[in-house]
Length: 257
Image 1 (tube, rainbow, N blue to C red):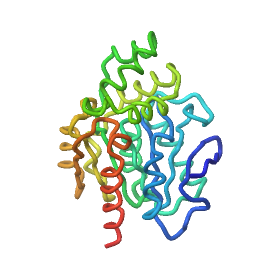
Image 2 (spheres, rainbow, N blue to C red; image 1 turned 180 degrees about the vertical axis):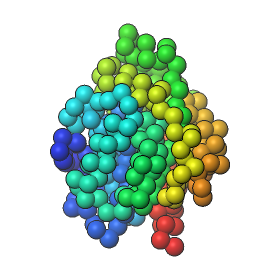
Image 3 (cartoon, rainbow, N blue to C red; image 1 turned 90 degrees about the vertical axis):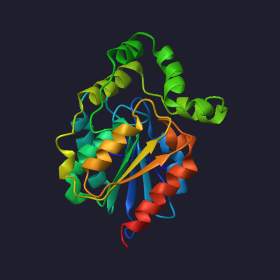
Image 4 (cartoon, rainbow, N blue to C red; image 1 turned 135 degrees about the vertical axis):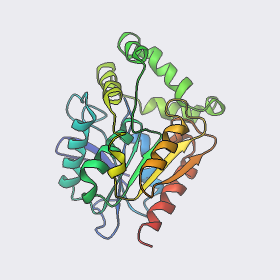
């Protein structure tokens, strides 16, 4: 895995330079996180695509202070895609990252090969208490992150819990603004206009973005495929990396068939 930075955006790459004959999986993390969240995907999917995991502005090693609107993140990601000249980009986003991927598909679908929406929704409302906790007791928020975002059966797995916390590194201000961006996001009236191929990934034990969110998107995005992973919660790329990667591998391979 290679660490690089382009125009203020830090990222991890499975290979560099990018192979122009392969599509580019661009992994976009969730609220308060950083690109290392996707390490198992950057390493594990290199056989089927170029793999890139970004630190969004204000996160990880990227410059900036973050944003309070999904559209601002979308613009920065599109600028990044252009800056690295990513061939056949396929954004894959989780939660906030999924909202960004949806926004990319709606507004820039003609420049994308496909999209992958993981543990997210076309509308993401956030309880005010979550933002208040982040601002007033960030340690409590991190404790709750494992409790509510990881499947109960996985909460005794030290590797999974450590991986989630180790990649949730943004400070309280940036993280609170991430959740504000989620709360303001509503693309439900627009998703029917998505024309690119879409894979929707949900998790049986995800209480933050329940499977019904994915069911709705699958019913309203033309031709979308929906795969639900068992034994995982909101952090399924870390909780069930092999199953998560297998679903993406099959999807990417199917795009040119």
